[in-house]
Length: 161
Image 1 (cartoon, rainbow, N blue to C red):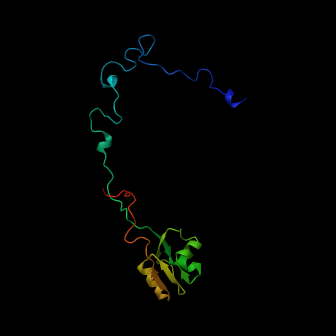
Image 2: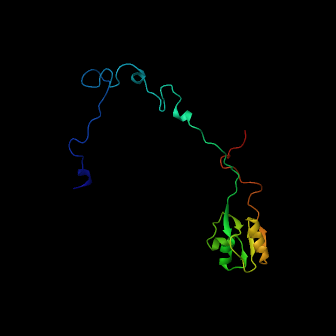
Image 3: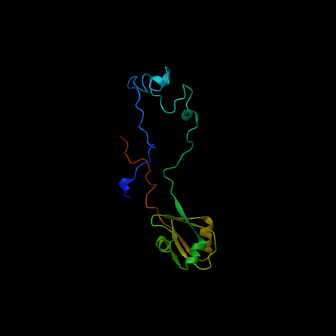
């Protein structure tokens, strides 16, 4: 048996009924729409509820606001930095060890303890992380973000006209 030999069993497929083509056979005159009324005369728009306020207009719309200029940081805790066993921590070191992706911005958070002095360069530090690094004898360097004030808004590619 080949693919082109396959067919549906006898009686499983039916010809579509052709409506509104005269009185010979079924489907003439009113063509299955009954008599009179809005449904017999024209198409009714989707969501039409007979004049009642439609559901789409009754339900509340989205509330709130999404800031298009929000800067997302990837958190890195002190315990993860201590586990690396290096004295110099910067984005390249974190990327090489799989703690960060190339385009991520780092914020160092204060979970964990440091036993040795570590020099950390990141885009942001929590107050507890900064205090813990400096208490262990290390230094913190805040890296500049690659944009001046804020990133370009996601939906505003066109300029004002």
